[in-house]
Length: 203
Image 1 (cartoon, rainbow, N blue to C red):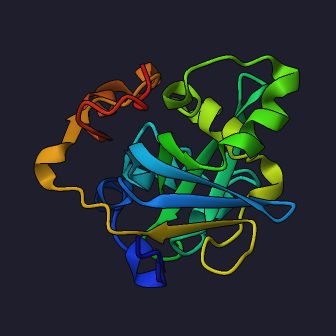
Image 2: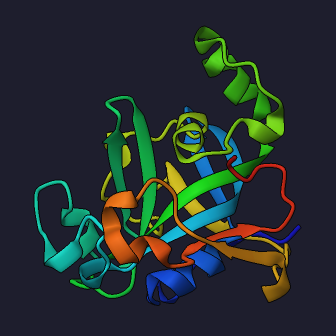
């Protein structure tokens, strides 16, 4: 299996294109020298200033949303419901605040590492379901605000790689994004993408 680190150009597309291109890619999380690898199987695109569902709608800029204005490949991590982190990858050029929410992934290595630190939480789920949602994925990869606004290109803790896994256009399902009723007509866009029939897709 050939592994190659993603380069900067990969992230310099609009969020819809990046959301599709991220499917099948692998997030590599290194914790105390031990690696966890999760293949991305579900994403959502947030198109920035013209998208009511985006945190940067109308170019809103706050201390929380500053990472969205960085160059593609930067991480954007925020807390929801006071307890779950959501992991996003910034798309496009600097000052064009688009991003992709990584919604779900398939654990392909590091299961023992995950089991050890999840023991206190008593989370007992099938392996395919452990990262089948944005909060669950962040928990499995131990992603929190300490990893906010870093580049996936030049750090040792969290990177993105590609292997020989091929995703064809017919493998990708497009659907409405989830939990964005406030976004009016923008909630109707089919900007959620996932791998057809994959067990790790969120329910």
